[in-house]
Length: 433
Ligand code: URA
Image (cartoon, rainbow, N blue to C red):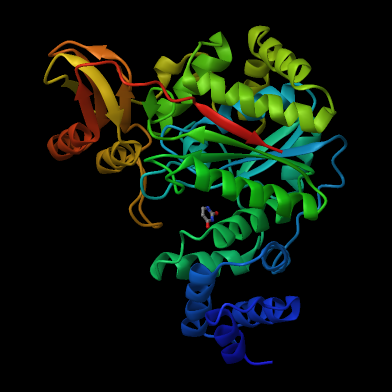
């Protein structure tokens, strides 16, 4: 078998055999297939697509290219959630303790932020002492004991995806549904959980710009997961506007704690409750209504908040910060951004607002960059809100005073105003299961 023939087949729109896909992944991981050959095949896939069989084979080959986590020692149903990435998306911090407090076992691996999107691992590390890298034995033991442990990627999970993703990033081949679906699902399958709920975002701050593309991606990922014997559902949710009001690591932990403690009504609460309800429904085989009632009760009676405290404590974090969030370190500088006119906020470009956070120090441009946990943005107004001239729309926080001006300029370029109230878009477009 030659990689040259596999590339030319896909270039000509001919479907690949399972053995050819397997040859490609194995050869690319062991270095026999070169970057330039892999890049050519990726571009051919980008242009000509893949059918469901090819996509499932690609996913399984990538999942099996490294460690497959064995969670069988954990008693009970293991669950996982995954977001395709957004701005202000701190749902894992809320959903994971809710479902753990209801008896699910959350053995979760999360990522760091890159570009305009944040990552759960950075948010958790903003809690002093929180260890996101326990040994694999400690990881399993913590899940067994407390029902929850959220860590960064351990072991050698889906190395084929790691290598291919870096290549896609450099060759304009990220935005392909079969490549995204297989990339995400290879890691989820390797991470071992039985039930997986995906939060597929669409809109200005998301990979998928339209609900239709997000639905197509969701269907593919659900099919792949089911084909691999897992219980999978996908929620399609809006990411035109940042989720919640806080953006930036410490600020996002504070907002999540507020919701866990007080169940405050917000867009963030709605998406979190929906995700948690779908996880409980899959894991416990009960109706959506019963699952949602359980989730709301766990928020109301404080058991989800208690589970969050237990998780922080078990992973070495300082629980005093959670019990009194005023104790979190703060940025040296803050600045209020005000409305330039009367009217309604008709649009807030989530990607630009995420990038404003990066300028302030809350995120990374390159993987190696360090993050300032205290930096970020509090949104006082969001899309649909009425404002009068000089009302505060947002407050920005940073330790680098020089960054305030450019951050304010980028933020303001993200916000549009209108004289009439904009039409309200549904926060949750659909659930695919
Ligand atoms: N996230 C991933 O893990 N992979 C993709 O291809 C896109 C988003």
